[in-house]
Structure formats: structure tokens, C-alpha cells
Image 1 (cartoon, helix red, strand yellow):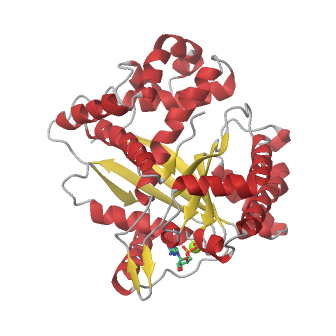
Image 2 (image 1 turned 180 degrees about the horizontal axis):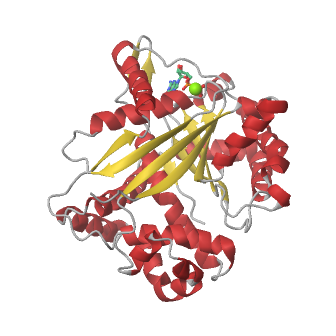
Length: 391
Ligand SMILES: Nc1nc2c(ncn2[C@@H]2O[C@H](COP(=O)(O)OP(=O)(O)O)[C@@H](O)[C@H]2O)c(=O)[nH]1
Ligand SMILES: [Mg+2]
């Protein structure tokens, strides 16, 4: 059997101790394990490391069955790798033109203590090492803890300002070690999303109210963070910090009971990881008028995704092979095929639904999944749990 070709998407999740990181990834995985047998599900999510998968699943079952919380994992930084495999369709269409067959989501947890406490020696070195894996992520989530907002009701700025300032300072502290020869990165997370964790504790707060709270109470700290992040990347015009927002709740926590089926936003994580960079990167690349390393980086990933969405025909296969000639002539690619990639990126509304129905009817599960992800993002917006930057 031919090897499955996977498109990797990395995400980074930053959150202070107790902000809900471990519960979130456990809820994500547990829910995926339950849904995989669903008749409607086109794909399954499997942890690449069996022991890690068992650990997450056990966490989930503990919460579901006996309202037991996962053990605290203070200071630990974890990476989890999940394969998102398409279920076999009865009639597979020719796969040769497809740039990839499946997705891989690599989820990196970053404990907020890292930003609050100085480190030296081997600990400092270990942090820098761990941060290197951050570079592969396209999307980073910054968790804002709903419980802390409640604890600071009326003066939320105390918590928000401290959170963002610590974070910006922490990044500055490791900047020199991370950047070799002071050269800013081509590849670095360029989409920084604010996520309200434990949103079940704030049932009256929709994503618009969440955004407004951040802007009202901490806009200068957001600016400051943006400035710091801009210092890490080449072409900082291709960067959005605090322009996307999402509500998250891993379960509904009542006294003595954890309702794991009552989740908010957890099902958006995969669609965000897979599709948000695509749309955004195409937009940014277009504004760059075809030039430079960042442009190439952005359009290369976008080309593969456009191919999987069915937009660019035979060109798609070339993206998968990392064909250097193609990469070199990407300037040309955008001129000749850019329209098609852009079309694919702009697919919305009825056209998107038609594309999805078409893929489902033809049992093209990858295309059906990816178009479905984009529909999920749109419903997230309609349901006021997600705001996507319009820039
Ligand atoms: N209400 C509510 N509480 C949560 C949620 N997620 C986590 N918690 C609570 O926050 C605690 C810390 O979560 P944990 O995932 O261990 O935080 P971490 O230190 O960031 O990994 C848990 O023990 C729960 O009590 C959530 O979605 N809603
Ligand atoms: Mg933890």
C-alpha cells in the first residue's frame, strides 16, 4: 500500500497553569474517539503515540464517568501528535493528483509559568529547545482563563494586562537565544488567536463581548504584544495578533458532575488549524505581489491546500512533491494559477455548500472534510463563538 501523505499543521496553545490546557486536549481527543464511529464522520483522529492517546482518553473517561479531573501538570510542556485519517470511500477517485491524503495535527502546550519565572542554565536551554518547535506552528492560541475573569470581575484589566505583559516579556527574554544572527523568521506563527477558556462559567459572554472586553481593557498590552511578535518575523505585515477570537469550554463543570458532551469551540480547533492559515496566507501573499521568502512560504502551503480543495487541477500534485522548480517559479504560479488558488480560498456561502455536497456525493472524503471544516468556521461565526479577522 502506498504511504499516506499527510499535511502537517502545528498549533501552539499558551496558557497559565490551571487555565485548562490539559483538560482541553483531553476533551478534544476524547470527543474525537467517540465520534469516530459515527456514520457521518468522514475521518478518524488517532494519537500517533499510543501511550499518549491512552492518557488523553483516560482523562476524558475519568471526567465523563466519575467527574475526575486530570492531574495537574505544572511546568510541563507537552506536544501531542494526531493523525486525521480519511475513512475509505467505496470508489476512490484517482489519488495521484491529490497533494496529500490526510492531515496531521501537532498540538504544542506551553505553560504560562515560563513567562512568569526566569530560568537559567539547563532549564533555560530546555525552554529555548521547546520553543523551537513553536516555529512550525501557523496558529497560536493564547488562553484567557474565564475563571480569572470572574475572580477579577469589574477590574478584569488587572488580570488581562498582567497576562499579556508577562507573555510579551517572556518572549523578549528568549528572543536572542531563539533568533540566530538576529535574523527574523520566515516560518513562525503568524495568527495569534485569543481564546476564552472555561467559557461555560460565563454563559452570558458571547465572542463579541469577549473581544470587546479585551479591546476595552487591554488594548495597549495587545499592541505591545503585537510589536514584540512583529520583531520575530520577516514581513511583519503578514501577522495578525488579537484579530481572531474563540470561546472554548471543554465540558460543563457542575458540582460533582462533568458534562463532557457540552463542549464549546472544541470542534473548531481542527478547522481553525487546517483552514484558517490557508485563507489568511493566500490573502497576505496576494498583497505581497509575488516576491521574497515569506511569499514563497505562504503560497507553498496554500497551493497544497487549494489542490486538496480541488481548485487547481494538475498543478496540485506538484506541490506535494516539494518540486523545486515549482517552488522557484512560484511567482509565476500566482500569476497563472493564483486566480484559482484565490478562488479556492474565497469559496464561501452557497458555493462552499455546493462544493461540499459535490465532494460528499462523489465520496471524496478529504475534499468533503476540508470544505466541511470551512463550513464549521462559518457556523462558529454565526453562533457567536468565533470571530475571524477580516483583514
Ligand atoms: N468550568 C470549566 N472548568 C475547567 C475547564 N477546563 C478546565 N477547567 C478547570 O480548570 C482546572 C485546570 O485545568 P487543566 O487543564 O489541568 O489546566 P492546565 O494547567 O492549563 O493544564 C481543571 O481541573 C478544571 O477544574 C472548562 O472548560 N470549564
Ligand atoms: Mg496541564
